[in-house]
Length: 244
Image 1: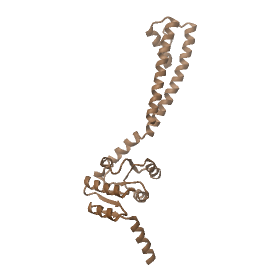
Image 2: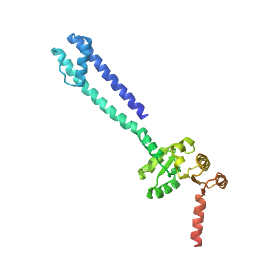
Image 3: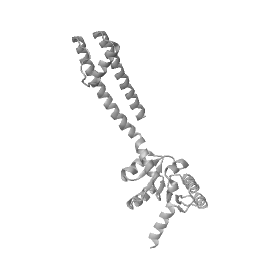
Image 4: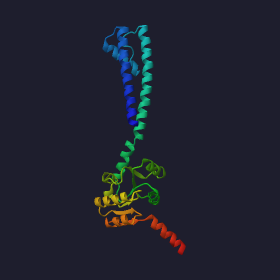
């Protein structure tokens, strides 16, 4: 959306500049009686303010017309500069440059940790790993969650996309990763991510979150290395506190 609006403004500025050249060419031809080529050449050097001087001696009407063209050239250059700046900034807001940079960095990683999901469990893991300066790639389909994580950890690598999609996992360089953590809100999605990662790379260490006993058993059958049940861990922690 941002890029499209900027391109439209660039197009409008281009049309305005072309229209100004046409008006200048016609004006010099009618006012000075010059050829079309001489009129267009004079228009271009006037608009560009290169200062080559007059190709023919101008009448009073011609000089007045040149003054108007110079004013239009300043106006055009102002609009063009503002539009180009807006285009560069908005294109970057679209994430194209940042995404390419992140993808290049991820492709060069080895032995990193891929975290699918950006919830509270993921944040806890990220905090511990980032303190130890470990390479972490977080995948989530919610850009606001990812932006929140990046605001806390500037060196954190994030990838917006569907974590259950094999192509997205490949973009996270799962083939070179040492660990993968399935911490999505949906336990079925965690199961799917775990199975997909094991299919891509059998020796990757997979941790998956599940409070459902049936799904947890399926995860174990799918060779998930560690099935994490937050409710069970909390229950055991509370019981241990009581019995201590």
